[in-house]
Amino acid sequence: MSSSSSLPSTTTVVPLANVETNTENYNKQYLCLLYVITAGLLDENMGSDEQEIIEMIHLIIDVDQKKTVALHHQYVQPIYIDVLNDEYKEKSGVDEGLVFSSEVGLDGALKKFDSFLHEHYLHPDLGIKLTLICENCLHLRQCLHPESVKKSISLPSYYWSYFDLRFEFEHMYKTCERNNLNSMLEKLNISPMSENNYCMRHIKHMELIVYQMLNDGHHFEKPECIMSNLQQGICTLEDNIEESTVIRARGLPWQCTDQDVAKFFRGLDIEKGGVALCLSSQGRRNGEALVRFSTVEHRELALRRHKHHIGQRYIEVYKASGRDFLNVAGGSNSEAHAFLQRDGQVIIRMRGLPFDAISKDVVSQVIFLHRFRII
Image 1 (cartoon, rainbow, N blue to C red):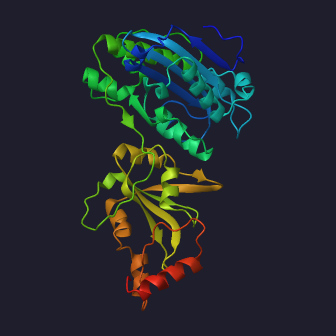
Image 2 (image 1 turned 90 degrees about the vertical axis):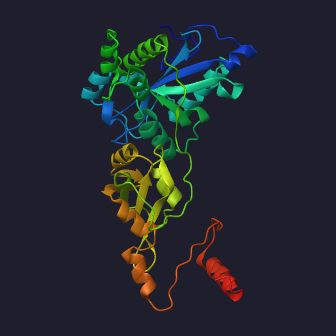
Image 3 (image 1 turned 60 degrees about the vertical axis):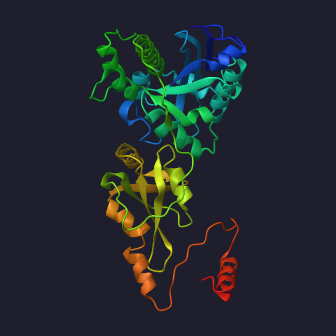
């Protein structure tokens, strides 16, 4: 592997094959293998400790030609730490000097790769069919997307869908057990590579597995999509809600909206109308919310964000039931009920208010609606 002389040693770019620049290239399919590691836990627990990404590798495969056309390896300088512990360095093989001398944060690393795609005529904006593929969902859903929210980074469109290699492997080879890269290599009778760097070793193992799957006739056709915005919806007490898809979040800032809650869980898919903010006996938000996820797996990932942060506040995340969610979202929770028992009290929901609206503006609008018997 060679590094371009015009680039710092913290970035390695290897164009491994010429990419056609004519219009025929626009109908070709490319898979972009992505592997990231954070400065904290690795493997199955990656992302659960809220640590920053410090290394990321993209490796691009031309599916039609079954050849690797490019590799982009970037060390990422973290903001909140300035040292890696010895145990982590030994396990990950990360060069601490390269990480902290990178001078490229996550936003810069993403922009570098985006420019790389443009320069090599591989960018989806040029009509190229480029789809990410990850070992599992953690790299995007638990690491990249949550960190991008915290750092106010707008992710390019190609980071919003991906193939989960483990699911594709299970579908192709009809296995029921949940595999990791080592077990996939073993099932395919492929010898593991000897490579000290954890991130590089795993991306090369992914490459071997993907090539074998392509040779065996597998088609990567239906990528998973990551929810970008919370969809509004109405819940009734008659709705049937899966018991194992709901959590309770505590410690939310009092001004937190349903969209803010969804941002905290960015990367995970929430059902339409799936955030219910809890009210106190005075009808005010009490810093808690019930959240309903689209799958049991996403709820389990949400539970791993226990004591992750919104600003300086850590948020507690606990299991909750479908009935808990219905009691709040359906309007029968005890707090709201107690508020409504007070003489002459009603609750209305007003949407579309200006961001800078104050209580006086709301009151004047309510008086206007009441005058014309709208409420």
